[in-house]
Length: 233
Image 1 (spheres, rainbow, N blue to C red):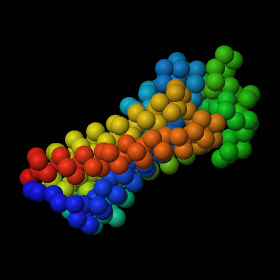
Image 2 (image 1 turned 90 degrees about the horizontal axis):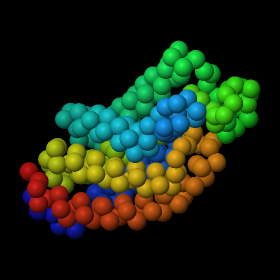
Image 3 (image 1 turned 90 degrees about the vertical axis):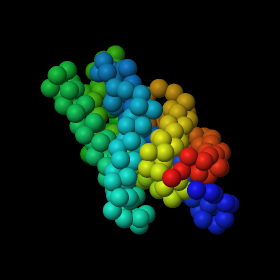
Image 4 (image 1 turned 180 degrees about the horizontal axis):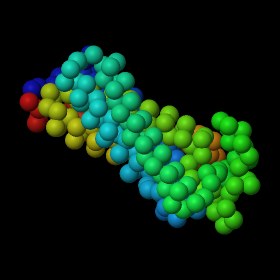
């Protein structure tokens, strides 16, 4: 399958770039606690930024891929990717909270704000001494759901043009996952450790990752439309 730089190609490239940026911004919404969270010494999920982003992105890609077997309409494909990603992230956050509450025996509390922006419950009285919060408070859960939505839509928006270019589901999934990993690593460097969500002071750094992801997205889009047809169906 050959690829020429016509208007359709430019549209595919634009979709890949926009999808990449949605992934990059979405990562900043996800509550990542890393190793401290695994020891109940920080809020969020006890694993890395890239792992969480890739997990939700893969779920979104699988959901979008299943929908593409039914229709070529981009809107239900994007919606399916978003829902799949949100279900994965919400289930992960809920499971983490069950472990915090019933296994570790600690309340959910954020050390980044004095009051939960969603419930307005005070946070400092429930932060265990020597920690920077624990569990996944309401604001973190809402923020993580928003991040998964953006990541799911972004992943589906990357996968869709890849399929239009090559027509090969396996090859398109590999390319989409590769782009997803790149656009997850960039904000991970920007965050540098843990982040609670949109209420975390680190969230204000997202424009820096946005700029870097824009450059990376353009380069990745160009490589995708050049390389994919070589192995397409």
